[in-house]
Amino acid sequence: MTGATRLRLQWLATAAATSAMLAVGAARTPQTASPARPPDRQAPAFRLGVDLVSLNVTVTDSTRYVTDLTADDFNVFEDGVKQEVTFFSRTNLPIALSLLLDTSASMDTKLSTAQEAAIGFARRLRPQDLAEVIDFDSRVVILQNFTSSAAELEQAIRRTSAGGSTSLFNAVYIALNDLKKVVARNAEDIRRQAIVVLSDGEDTSSLLAFEEVLDLAKRSDTAVYAIGLRAGSGRGSAAKGFKEAEFVLRQLSQETGGRAFFPGQIADLADVYGQISDELSSQYTVGYTSRNTKRDGAWRRLVVRVNRPHLTARAKLGYFAPTPR
Image (tube, rainbow, N blue to C red; front, side, top):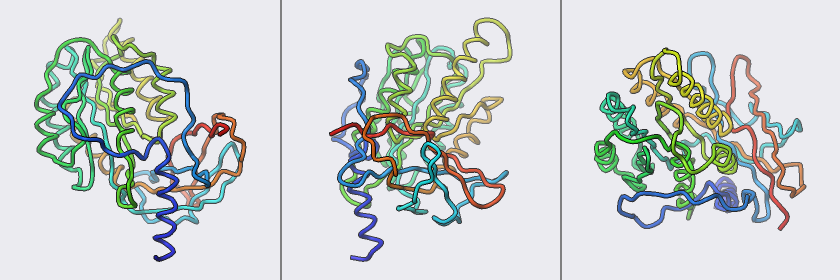
């Protein structure tokens, strides 16, 4: 066994214990999902001997993704304290992804365009990637369980139809929990996790509060990519409602290391999905063992910087420390 393979398997043993590295369960038929109230808060399992903190990092200049960096180009700070990078990979790891589509009544005239854009995104996934399709209006329905088949994903997307209200928080909560069904059994099974959610307005019917969903997202290793479709530039409750939705989508994306998009017109959707696909295939994995040995469950703020000029690094903003065993 080479040193690189040994290091990779050691990282697997630790990463497999985190909430993000989970294995796909048996296939199920499409179903309506009902979110339970969140259980008592639990810290992520950065355990099994070495408390490894793993980050997916996107690096850009003003025009493109930068993919030729080395470990020495990265500086990671936890609560202002510089950490020693002990794991680094430029390998384009497979993805486990939840594709969420808003199918509320307000999406009626936009849904066909949204479907085609989402199908184009699904077709860009690789054979080693896994994705599921969830639609949400008044209910949250898992139309397609995790699969690597672009044809199955397309069929599920085409089954969506518009009607009802918007249960955005329920949908994100269910997707985060569904991604917990994907566990790495070996080094080849290690997957980055992401949610790609499309919505055109504020949440109007979820059982869960935004704060509960945001907390769960921050406790996961899942990046949220949000696409917000503005209903127009008019005044009144619709404009106010989208401002609230924009805040929610930006917050979910920023905290988890993803990105929020607000295209000016529905025709731009295909390009937005393309940008998300490009980003997911251009990320680094950076890991370190925290110098802070306290197991107090506290929030730890993260900052990732790159040594080269004019480059910007983006990753999740922090994580919750382990709790006492």
